Image (tube, rainbow, N blue to C red):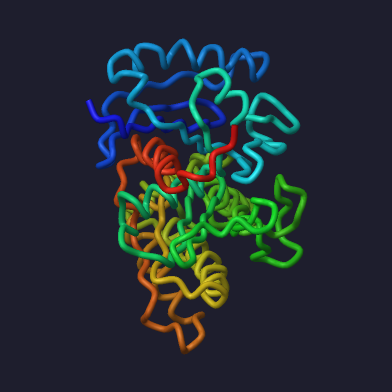
Length: 321
């Protein structure tokens, strides 16, 4: 067994997935556990240690050189989770320190979307790229900015929050406290909010009417696949707002590509076709026809593990103990 294995942990609001990855990006063993149901972060880590034990036995703990963790509001510089609203524990949590002490492994923590960007750069669609933007279109909208082959962290480790840039002035209230954040419009949650608003305000003939008050992104996708005019308009509206914000981001970092990941990105051409059109319409002329819009090349189930594990080798001197 090679002695260049890394542990990747994706700490989500509901579930935690983890796996041991070799230098070629092959996940040798993996498992999951609930994130919820643990009264304290210490209880959670104790359970995580127990769940990891059989995986360590299978590959040899001595072969693992470190652990990487992608977590909501994870701060690379401090190794902390900072006031993550969707986790069961609140405040500032010294996650890297706690995990390192429990597992006796050097541990790196970063924001989950930034971890996805690292994984994409090492194993996915951005392999060989030095400048790109990773955008995760899930319940929220996460992002990771790569420039000159490095993640942009900013002075405090919290840079790159595209989802919380203002897309609509004085728009919808966001969970972060601001008004009009991009993720309230261009995410699985955002497109559902738009649908419910339109069903209240408009009288279009649409198959979505029967699910008024309980719309999901999946229902919108299914309706659009059937040619429902309102559902197709929802994708057009969502794509336009996303494209306008991406055009602004491109003007700042001049990336080679925008790489999309997450549930809403799985809508395929329903989203991608209007997104490409609106992006080109909104780009500065010097950027037109230069920026590719790509789907992630990583498998959904494994992307988060790969991204987190890639932190170990990408930043071998930046461990937080």
